[in-house]
Image (tube, rainbow, N blue to C red; front, top):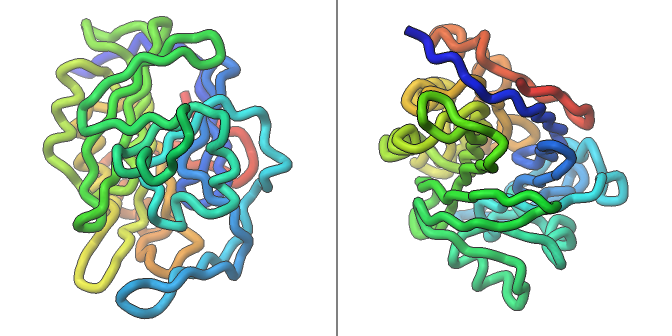
Length: 263
């Protein structure tokens, strides 16, 4: 029997580009993986070649609303944090990996979290419980996802209603354990089937659907699937895989620069 979620909070998201989006909950704004470089910007790769972005961000830094906190899956890849995005880290709550917190020092408001580590913080007058989730991305590099809960999200069947942001990762079976404690009302996933030589480093549509089922989420919000040459699945390919997996009706596509009500 399908579980009826009790989550009623209004959640809106505004996609800026790649994995960068404004997540607004009751007037409190989180920003994911800040990237604001213009089209044509490029970065050399250690194995040769380059990363190059083909689209401008939908919003520039001076067009952003007030940002309360940043969810930073990792700080050492330019498509998740560029030099412009770093300007947003000063004076704000930033949640990231332990290595990331060390590399971004001295910034006392940056918190590094290990897998499944929890922290309680007050943001915009509201207390949030932030839980770090495991990622498998580039070997030897730390990366982290996040579960966000606050008391007035309520609970469904005894599990805390929450929002999940995957960060950059392939499918990880261990993520299913979040359902022991949380009901995931909104799952935001970095997809695109990003590739490096001989290695897939972010989820494809089939993996995303599998994880969506594992964590028993209500809706799935795809990001991180266009504007870069190392992404090998765009909206068309993802949609086809979501259709095959029977979850297309649960997908909430974002619109660049425009707020979208997720739930």
